Image 1: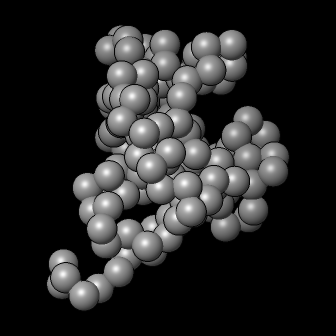
Image 2: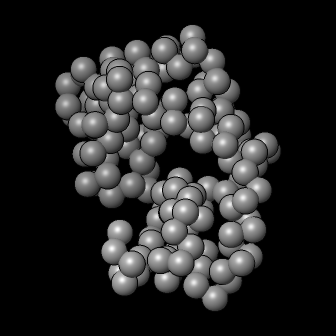
Image 3: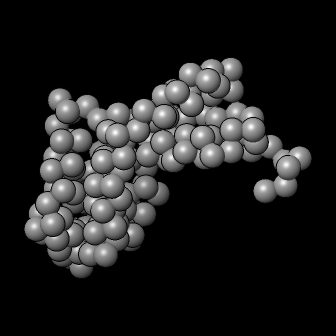
Length: 144
């Protein structure tokens, strides 16, 4: 990056966490960071997070969930869409549901998602530098 350029970072969920990594690496360049629903810590009492973590840590379950996702993705488009809308996206927009149907319901995509979840869960649990980065830049970091 050019020394005279500034960076504005915006991230949502796990993207907010990734944005914080950028803030840590380029502290002098990042002028503003906005994290929307940051994924900074694991809530062991949250059933969805616990289930995702359990599946992601298990090679067998990860393969099974990926196979199930690819099977659902191979069904008729209207069936796939109704399944995604019912179980994942009751509050999702039509565009998000379409993206979920066309991209997430593939074996290798789901395997990659679960692998990323596994590694990020491990990293989020072990990373205290993120919080010190936030505290050192309170005037330029906004978390919603």
